[in-house]
Image (tube, rainbow, N blue to C red; front, side):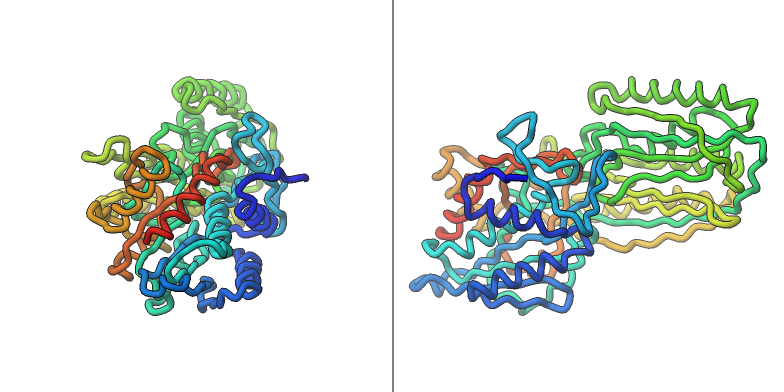
Length: 491
């Protein structure tokens, strides 16, 4: 595919290279190696820590040696989301960027996430380091690993590796915004198991596929009223009120993405199959009408499936579906003093449930976000308690929290913020928006560990991150890159 020649060329060439190297979470090594080679070729003194984070340095411009050291920070990994028609293998295949067929002002990808989150931030950092005409103090870049699935790179960044005191996080998603705070998160994994039953030979079996939902970023899009495919399918099945057996139920691929598709295999007595199919169609249409224009594409396919030797029994199946259908999920609360900002939410991001041998096992990954650490704990506990209550119905339950991140509290009196606002006004002729985000940023990890750092998050405009509809506004890249360099020169 021939890629368009866009300005600024020095940024887009790096972005295209990044797209060509697979780098989903936990599979970033090839890209980190490429970044390390790039830095070595240019004398930027690369250093990888034991957790895979890469640090590169460039000496200050003569006369700026005593200026505050600046850290440009990006994460290397991307969220791997593909459309149902795509056979893309994120561990092996390159992302295929292209101009959006619907609007050539935007860059998108072919059937997958674009990885502008955070590939374009990396590209701007690399171009900035290469700019021989930029006047700057001591300059460092830190490329962290595994931001999207637990922020382990940032969590393991040791004090003393970086000398700078001003951190510019390049993971922002709106060119008109200066971000000075973010939500914290808890990732909670619940594992459930229950005895399966031999399936009657006379049962009719069906495979259900729910698709067509918009999905999106579980932080940025959680207030838009979009359906969660896993919970939508559980609700449809629960409301059929049929004595069905559940063989499997699964959907979602990441805790920080709203599931767009889900599937299930169910069985029902032969004499009830007509009523079941009618009830499924009825409930799917009812949910689609309820969603309306917010998420208009819901589709439910019902196809015959091969017979199954074992499944979760009707009573246990109904209990499991009711548990999921009633799980707290989505928007909980908005901020009282910041209009249009989400305070707290949760997202069931991944569900894998099915029969193996004589047991039905399920694994459910939920991500709770909040700008209040107290509320975050309260909501996560409520979700977990919902699962724990199922023990009374014969389920074996284990719960763990593989990742917890703190909120980044805004500092409105930040010197860096005051400078950034002035530079923005000089460049754009208008004031920027200054806000917190309900998304997660590594600045939340850095704040308690590096309390002296003055931090800010910026970036070009990205829409629909964490979904195959992700797109990057092309003109905003040039403006954001120009702003980044002006800000660096002013520090």
